[in-house]
Image (cartoon, rainbow, N blue to C red; front, side):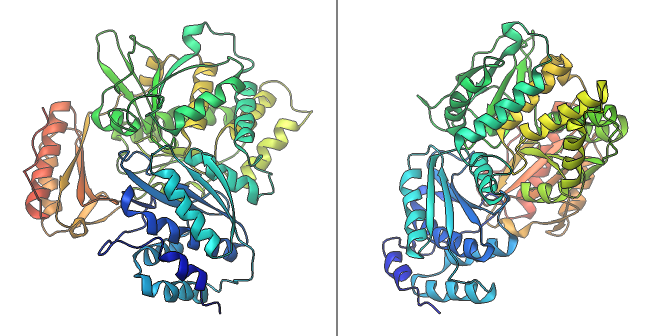
Length: 545
């Protein structure tokens, strides 16, 4: 057994702050950037061990997504572009929190527990977002990879979905695509152009889309992509990072939570606009109508649009494939009712966190999953993909059937199945709107969202909240759920739930009701109950103006 001398020697250059305890969650680690140097070094070590264990290339992405610019984070990417295996999330937490003198024994335990062959070669792909701290933190990852004798490829500035894509391409011997940023642009643009080639040429205003890049990596990457689109889509990128702070008063999370347009985007009435988050794995759409009223089309509306399109194509192609939608408790009740009762497509509710949606969506021939925050994608089973590709190539298939199969094939190529991807989702949505001839208002009017409100309550320890039923019911502290139920009964078409944040000591509150005023009042009432029973700190929650 190696004694990890080089690891111990290098770890002195990446000291752990005294008393800092971090947890690897759905989004990996996130904290203030200055606290993360030792974590990055150790995730470089863990990526090497994971690579040796799986005999595959592993990805490491330095990003804190929609968090403020002064934060940063890191997540590991497994061989097929998926999120890190749960057992290894636990290893990541142990490794990040180990004291300097215990580092060697923690590494040794991982090697022994998971039978890691240290003689295997290790390869790591590295990417980072545009935060000022990301370059230095990426170097700490490289130090960790090098200390354990791994090799690495540094892709530099890439979106999180691009790194997931590259890892999948490399480990499938490029069956999924070419493992370069250019290969990513080529695959997506060719599929988009092929999918929309039969569409009549729309006037410029129909082809133009406002994009809020959140002053992040997505803005840079969209500008690189645009030449590949051959002017089939005109992208007007705002908050492109040339001025303004990352995610500050802009980006998908800001728009979703505040339910208003980002700063730096001056929209005309009924103009299609969308926002990315900081690492470009989320997207939400919106517009302002003639009366100045803001309309948000979030992950639920995106899932409904894509599911409608795919279901129609599967029916036209006469392909007997099972399609299902996966949501979380945050999905608007109107969307769930519409998908189940009007579209007749089954809906499954899972715990909040994209890894839970991704896992559930893998159970179906075609699994559409989107969190309400705009993070999502579509997964096609191997069987479904094989049937669709065979039919698309079948010379004996003619007319509508053949055309539908070809459109499905192009949709498979356009969608990034490894993870939610704002750029891929944007192109998919734009293609569907063009094919169906929909304006953004027509898309919006498919169903009407129930008014809703999200709030968060600061608490001394978020662990006091425990939930069941995919996060929809609280089982502790005692009495909390009963008080929530009593409040919900006061309003029509209402529901509410609470859940602990995965990243900070706050409890998240969600409420919806028949009117915005009722949703706001319900959310405030539930927040007060949480504050009182779950150890609220600071000021009592205020009713939003």
